[in-house]
Image 1 (spheres, rainbow, N blue to C red):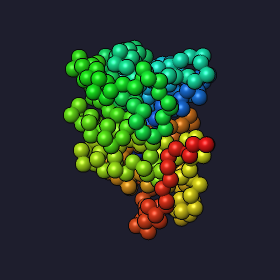
Image 2 (tube, helix red, strand yellow):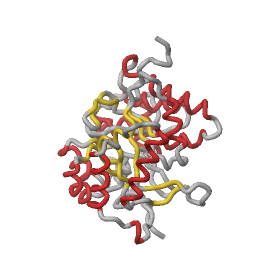
Image 3 (cartoon, rainbow, N blue to C red):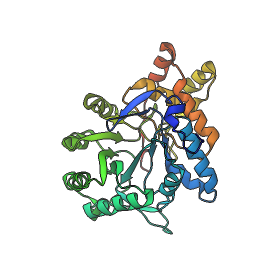
Image 4 (cartoon, rainbow, N blue to C red):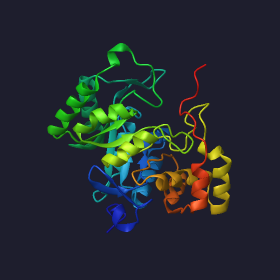
Length: 310
């Protein structure tokens, strides 16, 4: 059997151990594909990175059609081999705006959600998207929404439920939502929640608790903080740096390992555009945090995810 057809999960252990997403067992460290846009001029390198991830046991990839207007989805479509058993998770709630100063715009209306699903299916080459996250603007790092983009949650979930019933999507998740919005959405059968969350920005601890109670996968994005200027970085924390020195790893690996120890509901999707960084992220799943180190990390003060407005 050639490397082109070898299933990753049959030849490698699961990075970070095993977790559950949409009723399926997946590795607790997956891959967030947004940074693949950086390899727009080196498609072979992007394909090689994805296949290296699959070969190392990654079987959960997070993407969206509005990442490069279908470019990233096209890479995933090309990289997947016949026996790669990978759960692809996409998100809707935004659309690409090629050539504009901002490369995407919010697309929250039900008809836009449906159009986005059709774009996902076309660019991924799938008959059904396994999991689709509804990217709202209720919490975390959001942009001001024009009035026509302020859409009631029930109207959005009705559209996504209809698409699920029609077989276009397999399951529904949420992104950038509050505790109240998540509770309202529970009857729709929510399988995962994605919010910005890290060791230094734990505003959503109550939402993580709700996900644990409801057995919903918690998939934090910006897991190391520092996504925009003015936001704290996990890797700058003295306690994180000290832990890395003791453990013989990098501060980033400590920050990722903390997530896995902090909650069994957590599934990570760190992104990168290099194979070396990918391998370092996956290696974080094997880092054991002793009680003293974990307590020191937990004692780090949490700060707001978004910087104060000027």
